[in-house]
Length: 498
Image (cartoon, rainbow, N blue to C red):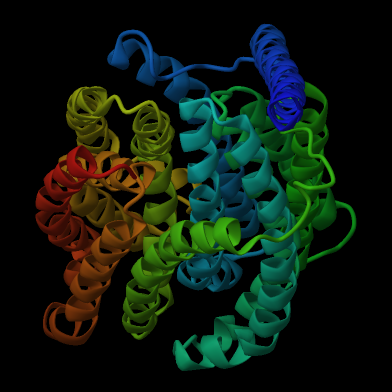
């Protein structure tokens, strides 16, 4: 009897065990099926998105072709951005006067310091998105986007309040001449009130670019540029504004482009449609975002601190020197759009290929982009050499002969060193995209040191000529650090994932 009972118990146990195993297998099959369905659904979403957008996968195909395809739309956008910046300068210089031009121009360094931090931080926030997209990890991608939302709102509010309070003391510390101070303060204070709009455009466009679509943000940027120019002219010519007109125009146009980019991103990218669990701050994600974004933002700001100190020294050279450098810098910035576009392209290119673990493609892409940048550097230097007398007249009245001559001197001083600038942009942004934003920040420190040396040592000794060669010296300092840093980063990635 006992043996029968034991056999019965054993049989029942086996039966229960088999039922449990069957249920477990069924559950596993369901999970696998669900997982497969989700993957298929995600792939379909990506295919649909690729058809609807200019989404570009940078992990497959010829690197040079992909880099040029990705960079060209951004080049158009950057050109338009510089174009409306130039129009600000032309309208202010021609319609308000030389002092207003010098005042607005003297805010360039501090404007770059703050806007540079915003642009760098947003670019850094987008790098984990590019890496997860390259790796096909879309659940984590959405988590990053959700945490980006929180961080962007916090940064926008804090920066607007703090910088609004500090603007006047900074301009005073910069030795801004009394005759141009009121123009400088009015213009830059209004621009800084629009910091949230700067964040709005830059974060949405950075995320869209990280997913392989470099074209669409450009369309909105072009629209913003045209709107900015119209508002500039109307505000001064018909509404009686001074330098505050172009400042308001900048804020309004940035808001419009940012809003359009946000609407587009939500409608056209199903893979980043957030669920409840995605919209929740998580330490792992926001810590990684801060580690990527803040160093990149600081890299721009640290570089700009050197420019602010340099501008302080330039302000002591008088309003003619200030106006000449303002015009020369606008022209130089316009000519350097190719380098900027190649750089931003390489950040996305490197980010996606790190995610896909295709490290040899990164090295090949860097060399190809460097060649393109160097060829362009030689061509644009030749253009500025032969037409350097005429181009500054776009901004400066022909009667200001001395100012035009000084502007040409500044232009050529920069143009002869555009190849080091091409190397700087391509290699620095590649290092950022690979996930080593700390090294990119240290390159910014190198630039800052070079500009401080010029401001405190060479300008007092050599005057205006030293100011013309400040940026080239900064580019060379940064390259000397970045090139070995790049190869060190490649070695690290071969040993460990990013």
